[in-house]
Length: 151
Image (cartoon, helix red, strand yellow):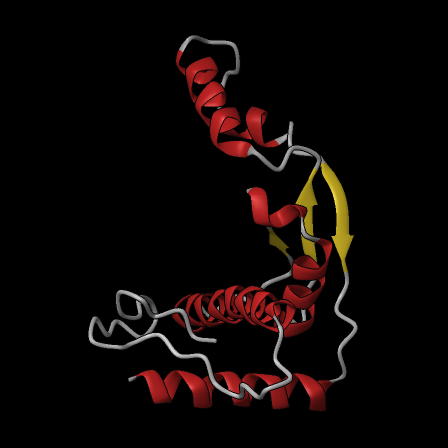
């Protein structure tokens, strides 16, 4: 699944791309579609991380995730596998309100600076890559072929 419902953003920047679900058979279930949707999130994240790596020349030691989808252990593990890097989930995954509170506290002197806030981050779980390189490459090649079809 390539969810290009309003085109593809970074790193493709193609507003004319269209969404795609391929590989369906009569045996496909709603669980297959749900998994394809989760996989597409991981693959899109991989594309962005790879673009940032290429632009910065820096390696990724780990990816920190948050938000509602980060509660899904399967997604976090698949993301670690596809990135071939650890994925770290914080103790508090709903960080939008937390971030606003940190900024308010920073503005009012509760915290002296951003490093003081960064020290408050706590890891709940780390997902280590387990997928072998050949399977990862097959998966990534399939993703890129599907993306090309949307363009």
